[in-house]
Length: 225
Image (cartoon, rainbow, N blue to C red):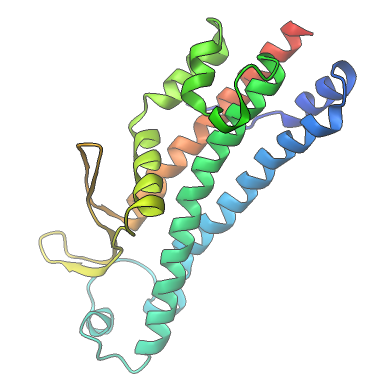
């Protein structure tokens, strides 16, 4: 179970009271919070944009099947909603990755005295420099999770190689119709296909680990100051 929330306001107070030039650090803290807000906007968009066109649920009724064959009267509305959903899903996963990267940068600034150069500051280098602590344990749990691996692989593939397909499909054995995030490979590892609802849950699980990481960061900063 994850804690309900990261008490980010406590971290802002600690920074204001104990760090030189606190505003530059608070800007980074606020960036994590803003990225979380952007993440939620894309989550809602990826989940709900298709509903006014195709309706609720994933049952393969004839009205939904017409979209697969391009025979619906509102096919153009469907195509626009599907493209918007794809854009939201991309933004959703990319926002999750940005949350992790900016959080690692924040840890570097608050606890490691900016030991890692900005252009090399990601989760792995930060973990190597952090001493054993609750924060390091939580960050390792994030890094070692299957949901984090999916986020990293999806972002690096879609950003640097090719866009992963998101077709609207009928799966007869499952009796379901909807958007399916296609399987892909990254660095020799195969990532399976998911219904978009399943993929949203997977990426959300990765993002939610930041809550425990954030509260552990609060504790580490309090101990340091």
